[in-house]
Length: 294
Image 1 (cartoon, helix red, strand yellow):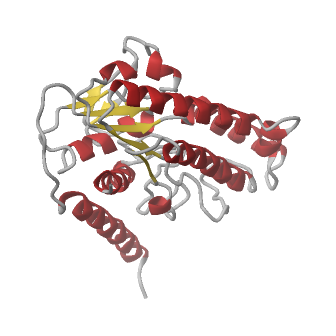
Image 2 (spheres, helix red, strand yellow; image 1 turned 180 degrees about the vertical axis):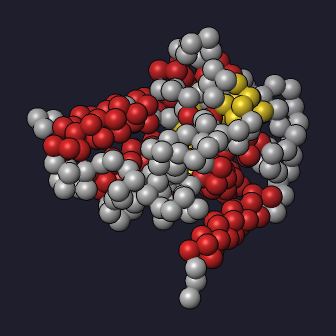
């Protein structure tokens, strides 16, 4: 019979094994490297792309870190010898693509005709991700076994559904502008990972009402479907990287040694409701795999 310590070590080993597989897929395939003047690879997006909360901070204002999936991709054969420009920023919305965010210029300004690769993760803050989670926690006490957060956002109208529809149109415009500024770039729209249990069953550690876990899962999936549709409609050179499927079973409700997404009480060196180091590595693996495909 396994002791608690041995079970925990088994979980650690499983997580390490998954990470090793991801790392192998990232580094074992060789692609032709290209060097040229200007940023050949531009990473755009929000905190899920900036690696917010992780060690190795490159830019404190935007919480950009060396553990982010774009930074990992930039170190693989897909980014080798490419000039890498990281303009991701925690808190970014689609508005941040065309407008300054604090002291940071519009993200779109990083693009040039020489840009050959663009990765983009955006939309979560347009939907109001942080506010939604705070609201779900706040209304839990009114109906712990029900879905009070879903009622809050769907009574009268589907608030989050409307926001996702708006995001879809804005992402369409972002892709159009990227293509206009960097006509030869491969554009990879990178989706959001599985934050919540895919089976809709929650956990005591995350303070949401029991049935709201399924609502939050469905909202994540709706946003990802919108991003995937825009990528599919973007034409040649635009694709979608699915980071949801490879992170199922590693959501914020899993034991700490299995999580790729941190709970609302995150481990040190990570951020609540964001990918930890393993999560960013898995996002990098999914993105790298998409980059290598035609």
